[in-house]
Image (cartoon, rainbow, N blue to C red; front, side):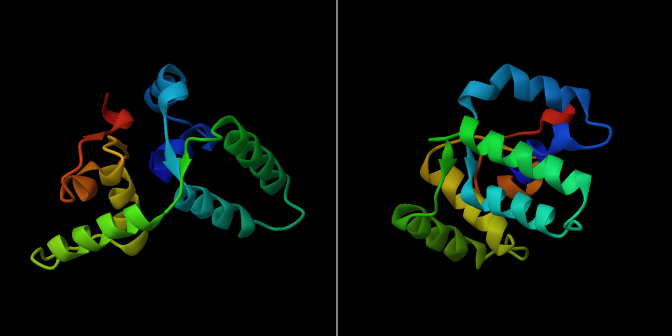
Amino acid sequence: MDTNILCEPQQKRPNAKVVSWLAANEGSLYTSVLVAGEIQYGINLLPMNSGRRARLQTWLDKLLGIMEGRVLSVNTRVAQEWAQLQTEAQSRTSPLPVVDSLLAATARRYKLTMATANSEDFRVAGLKTVNPFKL
């Protein structure tokens, strides 16, 4: 899952389709340490004494515990897949940003479908995608 899907339930007005999709698939979903990092970065930008910051930190800590074993790391094989993806991107006019390309490489390495609101960005990497916002 991309950050935009995993974080949707925490939005002020979460999209019901995404929340329902997450609930229906929760036991079979994977994400990346990079997504966890993006979320942590967003939390870190909130004021230290913010109730929202504390609530989101609690949510993230709980989520990472629930997803233990399904938060994929960037390892040597993912790095090799990333190198191949970047090589392929040399012939395209719009390569993916580094984090997105590493997410794509992770999904390709493990033969996973990428759940994202940015399906087109990941299809160029040859990935099967699903956009829960459009289901």
